Image (cartoon, rainbow, N blue to C red; front, side, top):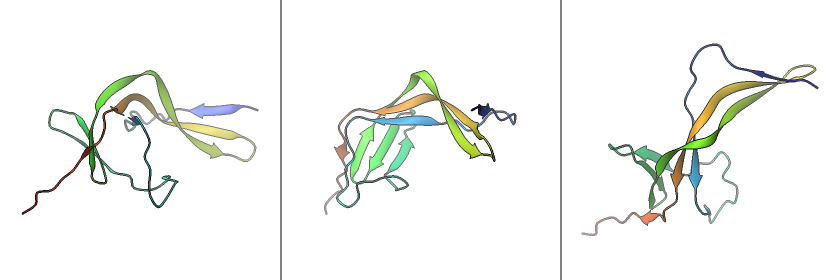
Amino acid sequence: MAIIIRVPSEGASEEWAIIELQGDIKSHTDSNFEGKYIGDLHFTKSGTPLLIIGHHLMYGKEAKLEKPFALLQKKRKEDNTEYLVKSIIRNKIIFKTRPKPIVGKHN
């Protein structure tokens, strides 16, 4: 069976990155996070990644992947399967420090 991989000829595609977390994310209600909102990713003025999950704040750093990943989209045709390259992922954002609680001011 032939596996066809096509690279779009439209030029540069969107740039993607992988987010790497050290530890687990747990929820009191759901065990499956697929398709769910988890948090917000921001960057400081100096370019430091900042991840906010609930009432927790984490600072991260950007790094290059040792081996890039390809983001593929699977397309099924009548008699074969074809993969379209959506993007090449070359970077990751690493969050390996403990989250800091976000505490508001009390009046």
